[in-house]
Amino acid sequence: MSEERFGEFVLVRRHEQGHVAELVLDRPKAMNAVSTEMARSVAGACAALAADREVRVVVLTSTHERAFCVGADLKERNSFSDAELLRQRPVTRGAYTGVLELPVPTVAAVHGFALGGGFELALACDVIVADRTAVVGLPEVSVGVIPGGGGTQLLPRRVGAARAAELIF
Image (cartoon, rainbow, N blue to C red):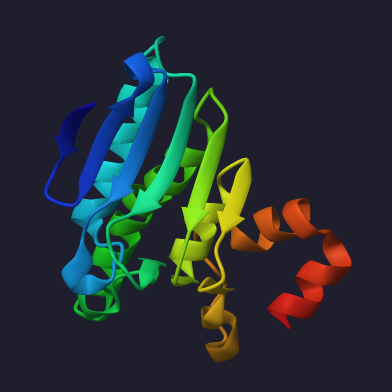
């Protein structure tokens, strides 16, 4: 097995002669909350994986024992001005689209909390495998915020429009 770091918070492990790549969210002190730096790292790792012809499948995992990913780094986001938030949006979007557009099958291995942007990262994968501890949701809708990582489009594709509406409302 080989490992490659993408920034401080993302790790890529290559298994089985490089055909299986594990994209690991590794920001345990923040339950893998997606900061600007982490979003850049996810996008960079996805670009590298997309260009690697040896990779046949990507598994998105987490090093945190109780959380896959709790979504956006709200501490960071709350410190942004409106202009800074506008500049940050494409960076964050790049992480979600990076996963969504990987040219190989993708599997999210979800345990613990997968909330907001964390759930959206899982939804960007082709398949979600969740254990009994998994708690998923888009809690931002309860405060009138539209999910920024494509959750309102991806969720209906995965579970159907009626079930998605029930979950979102």
